[in-house]
Length: 267
Image (cartoon, one colour):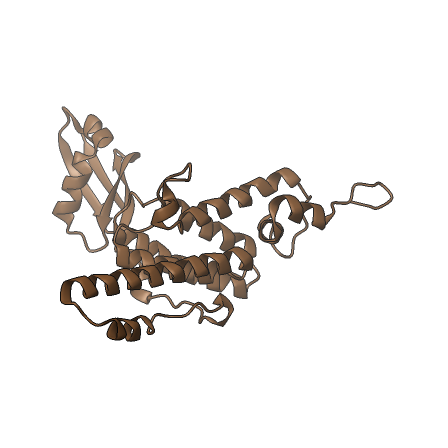
């Protein structure tokens, strides 16, 4: 790019069209920090969509019906998987920031958002609180906005709870007022502590290993790292594609290397 060639991209124009967070995010995502990369304005659309997906996860119930996307995306995976992914992302983003690997840190956040929220409401709150802090170094403006929404949801829930107490137990308005004053106030994400990951949550208890028939990979199975041989072999035999190659054959030998490979020798 050069002024003489009149092909300079004006950051003000990008900010006016896509927002400051989108510009920041794209500059960090487009390449490794130490590598040069050609500017492509069309490429910014990807990070804009990521921010839009992130924003939809924090839409409060009263306005969900007004959005084209409807309710926030809930993960199709179980909550254990989703929360493990969250802790892995905390570890990944923290390490990548220290090593100036901003592009891979952002990629990890994209994977986290694409997976969606956990199903359990209490886990959703933890997920959102952590995600806001992970996002803040890259997109501070939207992170602050999402933090404000999360705080407002907490206050709304507290008010609903207080109202229910008043109706059910006829508690005085003074007591309710004192309880609602304990609600967390809205403060900047900037002053929040960086999230910590649980070592146990970043270790996978399951592994995916290949299943061979006569030395050729015919399928894969997911098993526990401590899976017993008989159990692992049964799962391998029940795998649809593997079963085709075992059908009508006599198994001469079964080879199981824990956590690595299963092989059937047939005739």
